[in-house]
Every structure is written in C-alpha cells, then in structure tokens.
Length: 385
Image (cartoon, rainbow, N blue to C red; front, side, top):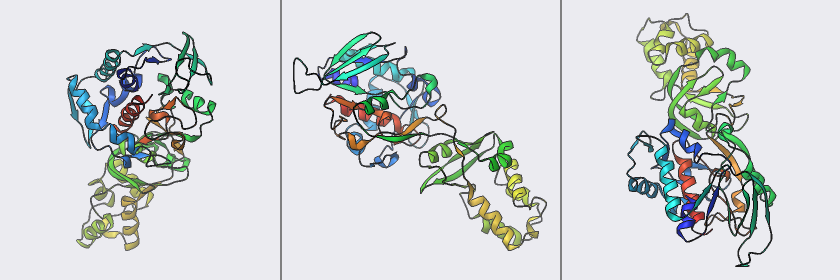
C-alpha cells in the first residue's frame, strides 16, 4: 500500500523482502480467503499506549476506500459476520491486486533480499533537506531518502516473521513498547489443565470478558487451554495474572432459571438440566466440580443453586499464559507511537525514517482490523515518504 502510493507520487520505490514470496501473511489469513477489512473499523477497535494515535490514518483511508479498490479489480467478496469482509475466492486475489497497484505505479519488488546493515547520516547529493540512508543487502547497496519499515511483528515466525523492525527502531534510538503475542489462545494453569483438558473439542457461545472488554462469540476447549474467537479477542486485553470471565449462558440469569426449575418441582438430574443449555461433557464437568453431579434439581439448597448459577454466568480462569507467537495472529506492542508523527508515520527524531503496520504499537481486534491498520498507515506514509 505504501509503495504504490509513494510511486504514484513519482517517487522511485524499491520494495525489499527477505522472503521469496510476496504477502505470505495475507495468503494464510482468513483460512486462505483473507479477511481484508472490517466495515466497523474505528479507533476503539485498537489497543495502543496512545489510543488516539491511530485516528488520523484511519480517518484518511477507511474500509470503504479499500472496498472501492477491491471492487475496481472486480474481486468478489462477502461479509461473514460482525462486519468481517472476506474474498469469495482466494487471498491471492488481494495479493495480486496490491502487486498490480505497485507495478502500475512503477514500484519495484526485490525478493530474497536479506538486509545486512543500515547506515544513515550522510546528506543526499540531490537534496540536503531529505533524510539519507544506505541499506546494505545480499543484493547490493540501496541508497534512499526515505526508509519505510513495514516488517510486521513476531507472530507466525514459520512464514518469516522476525524482530527486524524493532531492531531498526532501536538502532535509531526509538523506544519500543514491550511486545507480547495477541489474538492468541490461552494455556491452562496446571490446576485447570487437570480439570478441563479432556473437554478438548467442546465449543460454546459465550460472553467473554477481560479488563472491561467483552466479546459475544464462541470459545473452544483445547487439550492445553482455551481458543476460539472470543478467547482470541480477550487475549488482546489480557495481562499476566488477570482472570478471564466467561458467561456460559449469556442469554439469561442462570441462578433465577435454576430456582424457577426447583420451585416448579422439576425432578431431572441437575447435570441433565444444565446439559439442556450446554454441551453434555461441559455440563457434567461443571456439576462435578460443584459436587452436585448426582443430585436432582429439586434437591439443591439455595447455596448450591447460587454457586451453580454463578459458575454458569461467571465461569472464571486464570491463564498460565498465551500459546505464543507461533499461533498468535498479531503482536501487541511495538514502536512507541510517541516516537512517530500520526499524520505521516515518520520518526520525529530521524528524518526520512517511517514505521507502518504491525511493527507499530497499534493492534486491532480480530476480524480484519489489523489489515485495515496496515492499509491506512501505509497509505498515510505513502503520501509523505
């Protein structure tokens, strides 16, 4: 996005990639169909030390702007849910669209290009008011007035992700907000692992909350912890030691429901009553943990009813951690937004140096938001670099 915009302004642009394939993260996204934006993308969909930083770029290149580009290339797409837009066909359509935009504008791609060293400080022979960089690579040395770092974060290292962008920021004295895996599953604590590992495969529609953020989507029990859309969303807001609250019956007050059944004289086994609303294995496990799995609903006293209701509306875990970068969809943290111009994405104290996309401390929720930040921040930098 940045390369095409800069080239369209008449800049001479070379796009360097250390891998041999363009857009690998795009290609694997959305199950291979690329969730390329979200029509509801707003600044409050993003996490950052400075929640206002993303407003400028997002307002200047909106989801509608990217949708217009997709339509220009006649790529069929659909809304899956919650504003998430996917290609009808392959994510390859989006990659080819972006490549075409670059090539039509005159930007060049240089693949299998390993960056060995970056030097700066010399003056451009043409314009001493611009920045000046020498980028020494496995394919020779490139000289440029503007250097844009669009290298992403640490997530999914198996497709080539590295901490290179953070290293460049540190080289030039820019502060880094500590990075963590995000949009990731959780690993159970040892105690929870013993209680829930055998529920692997159980999926439930929930309202999941963490640090005042809440999401109404499914969770999935795995052999080692919890996953599913609601869990991935919660991981963006989670800090070590925080609980994750899960309302397993978000449609109603479980205590009141159980009390009504008891007062009506219902003689069903309690575990079967709960299994009317939840998957059987999960219902049985919750009743076992409450030590009422052999009781009928009419036999429960008020304390037992309240505790069971609480366990259904406020099922709570304290994760041992997230699964890690190999599974995380994005990296939270990154180049401190205080170091950058929100208008141009240029480093305030290093003329000609820009950081865009995931390498910056702006991380979106699950569902196309991080791609929209990539397009918007790339567009912003492309107008000025």
